[in-house]
Amino acid sequence: MSLFAELGRQAHASPHGAVSFWFAHYLCVAISDPVSASVVLRSSFDKWPITHFMRHLLGNGAVFGDEEIWRLRRKILNPIFSSKYHDNYVQVFERNNKIFMQELARAAGKGDFSMWGYFSSYAMDSAFDMSFGENLNAQRHPNHPFAVAFLDYFEECGVRICQPWLFSAAVYDLLPAGARQERRRRLMWDVVENLIHKKKQESKKRNEQNVVHVNTNIRSGEFKSFLDLLIEYSGGDAGYTDTELREELLMIILGATDTSATSACFAAVLLANHPPVQDKVYEEIQNMLGGSERPVSLADLASLKYLDAVVREAMRLYPPVPVFLRRCTKAVDLPSDITLPEGCEVMLNIWGIHRNPRHWGADADEFRPERFLSADAHQLAAFMPFGHGPRSCTGMRLALASLKLSLAEITRRYRLLPAAGYRYSAAEPLRVSFELLLKHVHDFKVQLEHRA
Ligand code: HEM
Image (cartoon, rainbow, N blue to C red; front, top):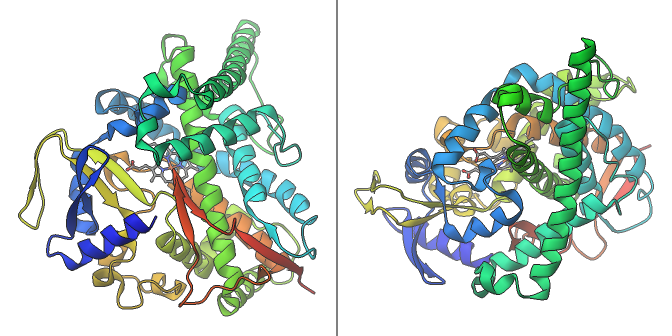
């Protein structure tokens, strides 16, 4: 992670906001200027070839697919993630949040513990539920084979991406790690393919009987899972094949799970270490609920402006995806008068952009949520944890809703405290590492104290 921070510092000092460096045998350009980053993100859509090893599990799933395939897949994803279906999915978060709170209650008042397992199971259950309309129940059964295979698979990918000599599949597949990945992939594919098969059978039966489907899994209305919508928007029986459906669904589950858990965990650790900020969040929630014990709902989120600022500030300082890797498929002219040639590997250094003092001021490294209450257009354009342009995250609105719902429920019940012996200060910022996503070296440890 220190590499990205150093590249960021060097780029901030350069008039172009960019520096070149070697990564394995690639000569790359790292950009920490938001305006140049936005030009690249709007014009170059292929990812670095080193990310191709993710295709072992995800195939041509939108996130790692080359531009040609990605464009076709994205056309189907866009309507599925439109605001039309937002409420449909948020019901899933509300439901899984209840289980989350029941599970978390077991850790409260018992000293240090890691938030990671709780947030990641909540995110996994929500992603699975949205994808299939089925409850994986990893929150109550963290040893569920799918959940274990998924987490272990991506942990191993995190190790691989930091070791360039493991990039080649010809070598990796012969190693014990390659064999383990193969077993995990098989298990996940089987689970997903069985669910696709089951869904298609059910829908065939319904069509034969001409029955209107109401999914009783969800409180109100007809729930449509990502699987339902992918089938519908890709053209029904003539649409996506089972392989294409599996690729897209696994890609959505990947996109939704660890990213959301990482963001929520960083926000929780920052709240634990900044009591005055936490007090303001608590006050805001109490003022809104006015003493009621009802759960926080989607409709409430619009009133929780300070909580929104806290979530954004946590993602600014600790973006779960700290770098995006793009390859220029044509020459790109940057505003600073330099041209990136065709084939150039570009690292969009989000960590560096989010801490660029030109945009965020001299206190860019400090946790100060208030800056988002008065952020100007330049600052908002320099905030890109979800990417930017046509290939940015489709799930941004859902992710923010999920984060705020869970953090609001935690803060109203508990006072978050730093783990014993570990307190964050401006002089000693959170120590982080890079393993596919950003990670906290101290494993997101906090304590929870019941509020009176
Ligand atoms: C805090 C949580 C999240 C963060 C920080 C995040 C961040 C990102 C980033 C950085 C990208 C890649 C952008 C790029 O390459 O330029 C991405 C792509 C994607 N994300 Fe998210 N994401 C989050 C949650 C979600 C959720 C909840 C979903 C779905 C339910 C989702 C679905 C996707 C998909 C489908 C893509 C691929 C987009 C494409 O290549 O066209 N993400 N996300």
